[in-house]
Image 1 (tube, rainbow, N blue to C red):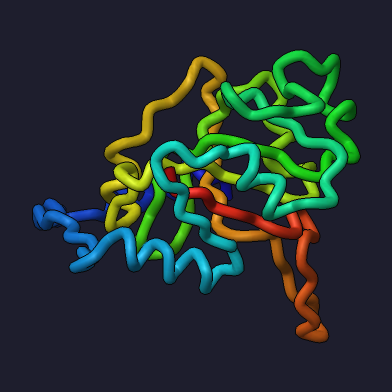
Image 2 (cartoon, one colour):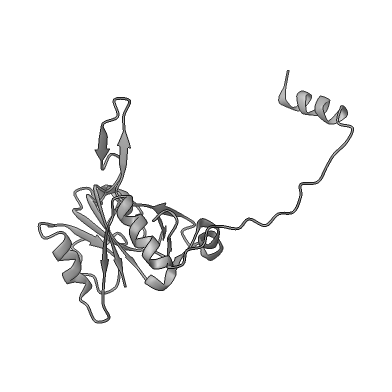
Length: 190
């Protein structure tokens, strides 16, 4: 039986229909959104650094990852050895020790950050051994409902929520860090 035939039979035998009741979804709200975001970020495995006005972001990156040789970023003011806007292909970012990117919205309920694609090669977000996400502390919201209301798509039309380092557990329940993306994530609140 084809899908359309089945749906046609269902429609023919439906005698009563009811509208869905209107109910606004109320997301969780925290007394101290920034405090909750920091706690949840740590819970998911991210290191959180609070920058003060005037702090040197390059010094923060080098302090967090002192052995990094290849730093990839297109963020203005970040001293990078690779720029994801000027490489020929995503494969050129292979071997990146640290990727430095900007987050747009942080979410207190789960510690995730919306990362819009603001660079030609978005692979920097996933291929980097470690990731530094710069996030304006004023852009931390309570819940995913608030986050989605703030998301603005870029010219590239792509974005992703990132929450701490990549991790997976196989059938033997062995936790593996960095299986699909960065092994370490540092969130710098600016």
